[in-house]
Image 1 (cartoon, rainbow over the protein chains, first blue to last red):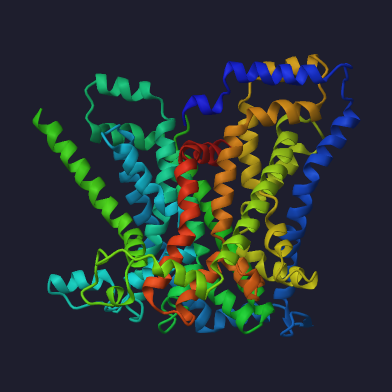
Image 2 (image 1 turned 120 degrees about the vertical axis):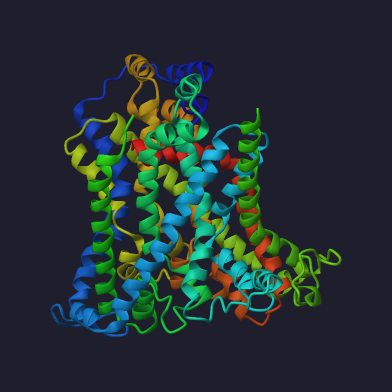
Length: 320
Length: 274
């Protein structure tokens, strides 16, 4: 990021100091008690909100998952690990686990690779790179709601452009959203398109954080762009790349909107990812106990992924 | 310089191809929003309307309460954004400049919250909000999101980059923490606030699952839910649906155009050094 936006200008500094000075007349040294209570005051809102809407629900999820519940969401009776056993006995949950992994494998490597290539080209200050930067960032403004509706039209078997183009080159049209073989791929295409904006911004930011002098000296040594990219840029942005892959995997595991709008988990459960399955169980069938059990499995999975990524990634990551 | 021309040529080819792929869905929405119903339902699909027609925008405004949806989203995301800026600046200040017992522990607790996906807590949160009678209310839509660990890290990062001498000078001059916070740290962290603000606003304008769960009445529906219900409602004409999409996209696109510079780099800084 460019330095000037982080470090305030000298004039701004002076003005701010003057302002602060002019308002204080009595010299005051905050004692330790004052400092503690101020810290408590400043942290209280965040801690209260996290407590009510994050930590309590986590505990409550564990409690609910060990009980059967009424459709109102009240606890009926303690049933031990029965909810979890049922999940792993039934094919539905295992299927959605597999679908989620497939979905992750389809979307994460593709979107990161695409964003990486685009960011690497845009970093070199080509003519017009500002325009391209804006274009490639555009999908970040797309919500899952609007994005899904647009792609619903694109995936339309007769009105959509993709099928028309296929026909132009003599291929049969694809039932993008209604064929069990294609539905997950279609959802993945749409998701890659949606993710590319955020990843592009993230990776470009990482590349711009590498100081221009490093590139300059590489150029002086006669390194070509390919060599510079693989030997210099890639290792130097590995922390960003690492962060990008962790967040992408986690967000793949959290996908819901595009599935709810485009396929409703179908056809024949081929796009029934974890969160959609959870949503169905808890908020359509009102089985909050079973839903909570699924939520906890999701939590543990994401936790394991994060830990593995950090353990494995730390070693390969180069920190400046 | 032959290889240079080749290199430049292939770079531009990649950029232009990628631009077409990324822009095409946007173009589909835009061009269809100006088409007549007959135009948008023809085969082969049209790329450009035979004449540009604004009727669809009037139709969509008349058939669904899209203004109301947008207002709901605007109120919701504005409250969340302002709330997050406030809570995260306060918490970040405490972590960056105040000394108190358990600081490290609390900080790692904040870190830990980033590992709890929102989906995991959604059932108890739904039950909580329902028991407080907050379904179909702005309180239900906003309050659960008013604190953010990510924002706290981002702001702490910005605070720690402020020159130390400045803080010391202010303290020697007898400024208390409250004054330093309000008239020194906050004004100097505007770039950080802008990054967090743009990011938070976009994210919550685009929120989907939570509003889907807790809003039932049409008058409280946010724009994302409203728009995705368009194609199931009485209007199934794609040209009208796309006019709605364009209306909804406009605010986010404008915000992106204004705030893009802030996002590049700003997010990377927060994600890594926090």
